[in-house]
Amino acid sequence: MPENRKRLIYIISNINNSLGFEWLAGSIDKNKFEVEYVFLNPDVPPLMKLFISRGYATQFIKFDGKKDLPSVTFKLIRHFSKSKPDIVHGHLFEASLAGMAAAWFCRIPQRIYTRHHSTLHHREHPSVVKYDKLINFFS
Image (cartoon, rainbow, N blue to C red; front, side, top):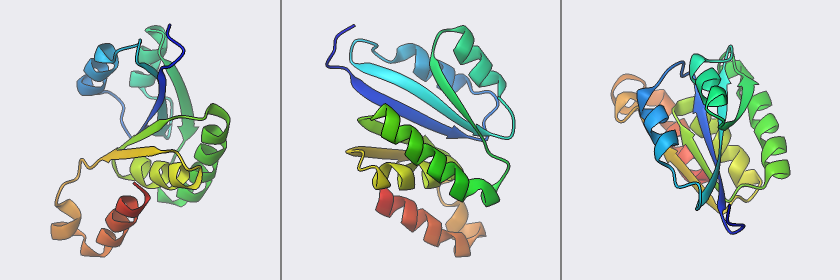
């Protein structure tokens, strides 16, 4: 493998199975990227077990709900400090909030998140929009 590969960490919260993530994992150019998947879930999800069986680098951080966000953020800071990623990409709300905050704190140069919830907060939960803005700030 080339030594100049970018280290990319995907953070995914509260996902058990996802065909999209399976496709994504299978299509990443391993000559350009060294990829790791971090799962934030109450228990080890089936998708993580599948990724392990296929040889993908994975980490699990127990996440039972929003009360765990501070501790998860600190665990991610520790992990990023050791693994030194070039890129962190968060998927879904909790992964994006904790992941982007931790990546910003560690000064990871490229911080990306995919906003799966679109206008949900604006329409259904306007008091949560402040957290969307915080994620934008950290990205």
